[in-house]
Amino acid sequence: MKLSIFPYVVQSEILDNLKISDLLLLSFVSKNMKKLIKSSQIERFKSIRQIEYRLHDYPGRVHIPFTRKSDNIIELTDCREETKNDYFQLNVAGKTMDFRLSNQYQNPETYFHPCDKESVIEAMHYYFLDFFGDTVEYLYRDDYKKFVPRLPKLSLCLSFWPDIGTTNITNIEHFLASSPVLKQIDMSLDTPEMFSPESKFYQAESVILTLYINTVPIYLRRFQGRQALLKCNTWDILDLLEFMKRWKSGEGFRKLEYLNIGKIPNDIHRNEFLNALGVQHIDESKTPPTHTLPKLFYDGGGPNTDPIISHSYVVRETDNRVASVSIQYKSFCFGVWDKTEEEFLRMVV
Image (cartoon, rainbow, N blue to C red):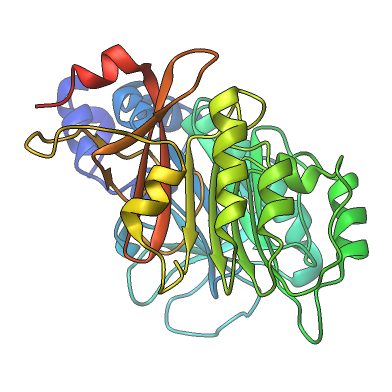
């Protein structure tokens, strides 16, 4: 079928019903075809919030998060398979790359030799920037010990998991010092040694930390990001009292949007604990608003933070901002609203 013989409105209708991966392949046909796709799919591409490189998967893939696997944009592999699906070559931002259609989902798959990984990622990224636009947030997920690209409009979401023994704080500190501030850190900490107070570790926009020893107070005191998920073996109630005091006074956590601390002690008395934090209460006969936000971290779940539906809240003294406070599913949950107390209470029904 020759697409160019149809009127523009028909062309747009056809393109609207193609998968993103099919549009990508079609864009390599010619410059005019690429231009047509970009002009007809402006609204569709605007709706894409993120595009994610998942290099810690095998095969690696570039996809739009929280969509079906069959909607992957492209798969990446450094293991060439000789199958009935023959490889074909395409020019991607000046680099010739080998492609085929994957067996399971018929999505494009590109093979590259491991020594070409850096140039392949770079060529693909610049092609995506031109094709999808630079308003999309591009995320790169992999282990920090592997190749980590430094490219414009590419946010790094890296894992720091020890292979053998304890976490090497010194090596990670050196890596972070030479890197831009990370979008996400996924790490386990099993040593009392901690990062320097000025470390970029505390500046990461979001974190998932598995803490095998009680470093909660140090981490909470220094965290400057927006969202944190802490999985703890143990922690002290006094740690949260100190956290709440600093947040309410405006002394710290000015950017904080969401905090979840797991493993609530079995002997905790929920109401007494919340009262000790200095919370205020919404009448139990009324329904409080639900706090949830688009996740900045990836933990295998959905696109949004776990909803907080709580009759308890606190108010920051410096700007009258509200945060919902809850103990649910053996977790302490703290969600900051972009609203004053008066605006917040108007949402109560």
